[in-house]
Amino acid sequence: MSEVTLTINNQKVKAEAGTTILEAARRVEIDIPTLCYHEKLAPRGACRLCTVEISKGQRSRLVTACVYPVEDGLKVETESKRVIKIRKMLLELMLASCPGVKSIQDYATRYGITKTRFDVEPSFCILCGLCVHYCSEVKGKNAIGFVGRGIERRVVFFPDIAAEECPKCGECFSLCPTGVLPSNYALARLPQFTYNNIRL
Ligand code: FES
Image (cartoon, rainbow, N blue to C red; front, side, top):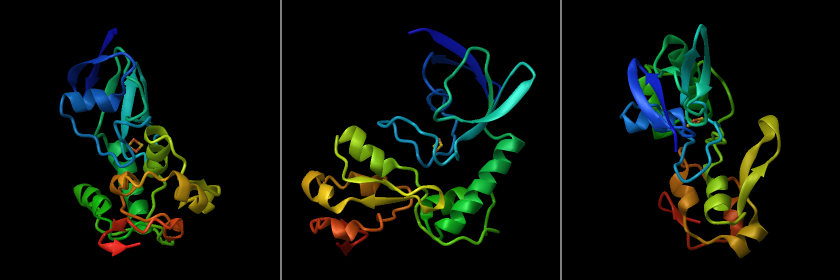
């Protein structure tokens, strides 16, 4: 595997070609916030909290570190003004849709956000898809999935499929960054699950 050299926050970093900026940063203990990243799953750039600013030559732009591959000569800023601005906006949006969720509150506090200007119906789901992709990619099952498009998009258990296919591992719950239950989970008739001390 060939190696590339990039700069992250003015630090020269070597990384294997084909790996991502997030992986390269983590190897040298540079922290980039993530909500939808899981090392066992293909990254999809869903939450965009890992946004960083990259430049090569004169041009700079914002990319998601969990998806964007390392390149030789790439310069990466993980906490530039533009990065912080977009993270703050994303966190405000998430605070509005997921009030009281600890992982989001912790990140919001880190970026000095104490309240949100957005007024949206709370869903407690950031549509990161970790539960869906873990079920299909790691377990090879399709008990959970997305339905709807745009603002109607949501995560649900498919009761009939879940009753047959769900391995009852509980991983989908423990992975969820907001701790939300899929809206029709109770219909999945999997009474052996407990979540947040609630027997389902
Ligand atoms: S962690 Fe990269 S987009 Fe969510």
